Length: 252
Image: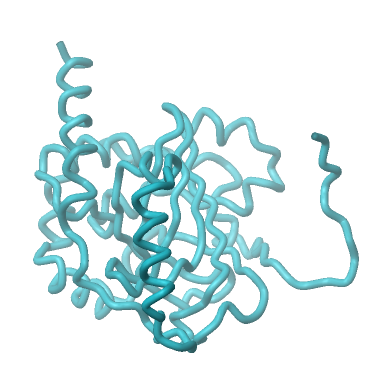
């Protein structure tokens, strides 16, 4: 009966997540370039009708939270995640700087279960962060769905781990995706996240992070697996552009 209840709640969440809680946050920047011509709009309309967008249609969750640049705790921003669950242990998310029609694609996040995270080499784990505090603190939300559905979702996410790469740093007022991609991290304790960011988000979504924190008190706090949140021990890993080709060998 418990599994059936979970299935029903999660199914409800999937139906509602994409229909609510959106279009209330503008992008940080206005991209340079000319307005779309009538011809472009006609071509887009035709493509919208004729072309399938199967990977996009599999997006079944919308999450809102906060990140910072690995190695720079003061470099904080709000992020909008549109998530596809590939299986019980793996999710993938496209991330935007807003949830309106002008939102800019700023990166991706891969989310894995604790079971998969424990299989990663220790050096690889240093690129990943835990979600325990984001869930328990109430700062990670699923806008627009009923509290019971959100609670079910957070029970599942609390023990997961994420790897985030940002490619367009619109929070730094960059109108185009300049510079190197950056590894991002999640917050791990109270006092790290700028509360002005939280208050602004809560006002736009008409939610209370403090109330969500209370609602999640019954969710067990997992023990963080060794290697995650390595920045806390001074083990910062960041990307840089180089003229050396050292990519792993690809086989097709």
